[in-house]
Image 1 (cartoon, rainbow, N blue to C red):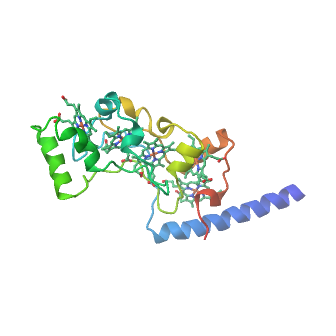
Image 2: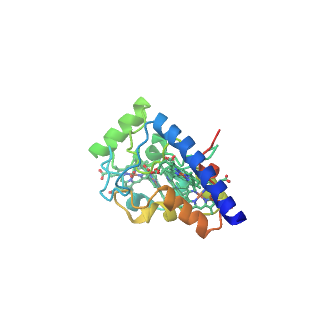
Image 3: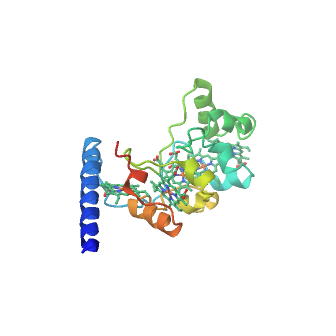
Length: 179
Ligand code: HEC
Ligand code: HEC
Ligand code: HEC
Ligand code: HEC
Ligand code: HEC
């Protein structure tokens, strides 16, 4: 009896949460994507190769600093690139373009590959620093890629699967702030 009762209460709570989040989703105009993985390489404004640059010994966090408050990994400042490219490959049209972005203070308009909707709470610091999860668990073998593409899922199920494997919480309000 109590089991049924509890299941009923849980189902009602889930329905309420779904309705609340559904309303937020509607507000921000969010539609779940039909196709989750975009396995085509993404065309970027500059032909940046992770394989080349990680191969030179530059560390992930030298370029993706995970600055406070730690939500974003972010993209490197153009000055980080120019530390080398003020002297390396200066005759390349791509590096000329890069130097122009740096000089005019406009960030390179990189095309974002991994993205969760605004109603999802996600923190790089919580995963990389607190839970010691490797970048590759969520982004694949980036260090081997000439061109990046979305090769790992960021669906709700993908998040929850990994949480279950690590005995991490899976309450709705962990990832969806009800307030
Ligand atoms: C540690 C030094 C270093 C840093 C930092 C660095 N690069 Fe490079 N980059 C290189 C080297 C070395 C090459 C390979 C040059 C060659 O092919 O001979 C290269 C190649 C490139 C190329 C290919 C150029 C061409 O026309 O062949 C691009 C584009 C590029 N880098 C962009 C960037 C961007 C954007 C950043 C910052 C996010 C950056 N690099 C940071 C050293 C660096
Ligand atoms: C020299 C600087 C540099 C280094 C080192 C570097 N990255 Fe990047 N990273 C970039 C730049 C520039 C972009 C944007 C262009 C692109 O997507 O290739 C980027 C994009 C990414 C993206 C795609 C983000 C998105 O959604 O748009 C991921 C994931 C990523 N890097 C992970 C890594 C990991 C993991 C490492 C270490 C193995 C690493 N990066 C090392 C400069 C760097
Ligand atoms: C637990 C999974 C997970 C781990 C571990 C992880 N990322 Fe991410 N990453 C994501 C998700 C999800 C997004 C999209 C975030 C968003 O849109 O708010 C993302 C976005 C990014 C971006 C795009 C810019 C941004 O900050 O949104 C870069 C660059 C990136 N990650 C690099 C890295 C690097 C480098 C590491 C390791 C130091 C790493 N990530 C570890 C899941 C992860
Ligand atoms: C590769 C495994 C993995 C993936 C994928 C993953 N997580 Fe996590 N996540 C963890 C672990 C482990 C913790 C730490 C739990 C703990 O502290 O007990 C965590 C913690 C969290 C926390 C709590 C952070 C805090 O400060 O307490 C949130 C929120 C979260 N994850 C959201 C997400 C979202 C959203 C996604 C998908 C976009 C995601 N996670 C994908 C493993 C993962
Ligand atoms: C570990 C993180 C995590 C937990 C726990 C979680 N969600 Fe989500 N949820 C997400 C992510 C990530 C998305 C966005 C997925 C995407 O980009 O398509 C999402 C999307 C949604 C959406 C939007 C519609 C859809 O299907 O994409 C609803 C509604 C939702 N979640 C409800 C819930 C409810 C109810 C619970 C509790 C049973 C819950 N979520 C628990 C991460 C989580």
